[in-house]
Image (cartoon, rainbow, N blue to C red):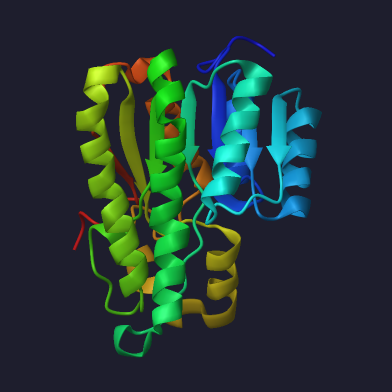
Length: 258
């Protein structure tokens, strides 16, 4: 593969089994990264590995890995260090929320969402931190437009709370990372054309809960997940060596246009 923007970098990437994780894995491998992926879905992760290798990229996968379990996270990162000697980038893509109106959301679903949207970012960052400090590495967290704006049609209070915390955590880790040379940034997608969103639009059409948000985008469409991957690529690359604590919103203008 030709020299790319991540040439020679070891990139830990969570949630490679489909959606934005798969798109990101393929892009990063095309840009020269060695991708070290993980997912709870072993079959989906295997398909991503097949696609990347078919395109000439380098990727490894650990699956199933339960990112809600700190021991699984530590083991995944330890294996990456043993195999590659270092890590250069941690890309926290994985996310698994549950949705319900605020008054009706159960405590179990609330805790599940925090565990699988906030806790997994916290634990992966903490586990990778000393290794990234050694290499002068970078962290890219995936937030969400839900972390900055409320949505009347979407029952997403737990999701909003978790992603808002990820955005805030990013800034604090960026501050603490200055002392050890670790850059920490965040990308917040809007409504993207991932399989769950496409299924919702197929079922409900213009009555889909995400429709009012999509109507405010630059082209009145759900976003291409590749747009998020390219934003993450910039922040993971040496092009962003002077960027830390940033929050890049990729939502087609939905949060800026009334």
